[in-house]
Length: 174
Image 1 (cartoon, rainbow, N blue to C red):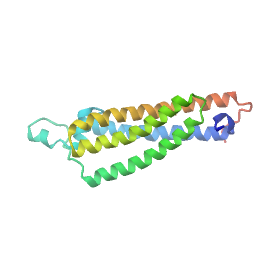
Image 2 (cartoon, helix red, strand yellow):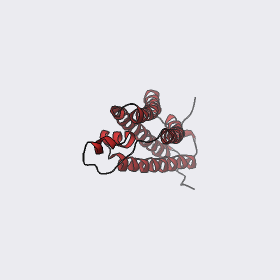
Image 3 (tube, helix red, strand yellow):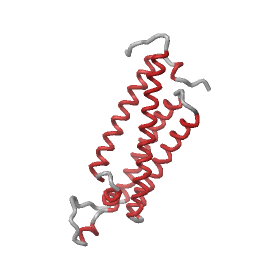
Image 4 (cartoon, rainbow, N blue to C red):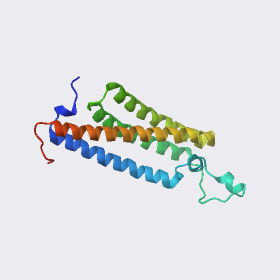
């Protein structure tokens, strides 16, 4: 398949670059929310998704009281995030697939990121309803998800810039 960023008009490359930047900004805002809720620690993930009622019962000092989410809340979280992230990653993956990198690298980034979505939310579900120890699974897989996502975005933006510079006509954005 002859699918390449070098074969699309400059204004399409600008559109794709704008999408990647805006999408990454939205993802980053989501990470700020995660940081606020979990302090980006495994224990924070466990507290946020399994609750911290037993810490209070044991007399531990806590910063914020957190209830375990209900099944309905977890279903809502998983439904909206898995659906929206899969669409977002589909679009980022399609853009990455048109880049001039090795097929092996592109396949690995696309597959890793999609699998990380599933394992992250499986880990959150297991943390909430099976055992707090599964917070490690959610933490590591979400870290890998973020690394795969941001790597894909950066690589795609770099390739868009290269394709624009190599283009015989440097059209400015509309």
